[in-house]
Length: 124
Image 1 (tube, rainbow, N blue to C red):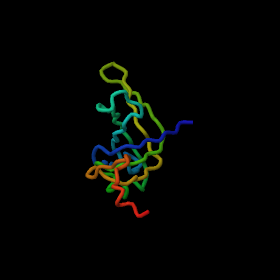
Image 2: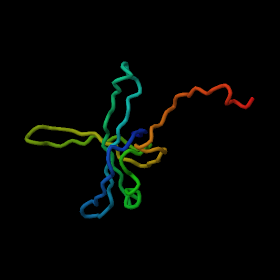
Image 3: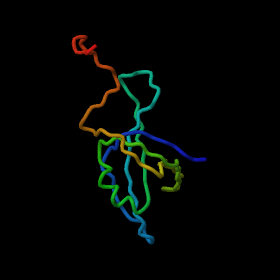
Image 4: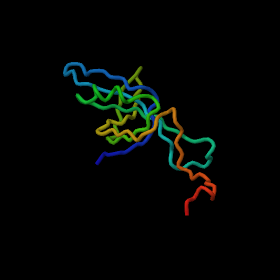
């Protein structure tokens, strides 16, 4: 089974186009995903993953898929191959089935760390 989940931030606004012949809407975007394990916490490793979604819902959804938003994308991994100047090449993309907004945008910094609270502020 080919199923994957990625959480990341959109690197730019999504682009909407239509497939030739059928006219099916196609939305393309890229997400930046931090790697889970990293030796050096100061130099985080980030992967930039190309994504696409197909379907009528993409026409409306595209206006909300904007730079900086944190999303969860569920879909399948596709490795497409092509030939250029006699050399075989390949590229990887995620064909999304489901997209969920996780809140927050590029303007606000989110933190999962605890903040110190003065003991006078605790009501008990």
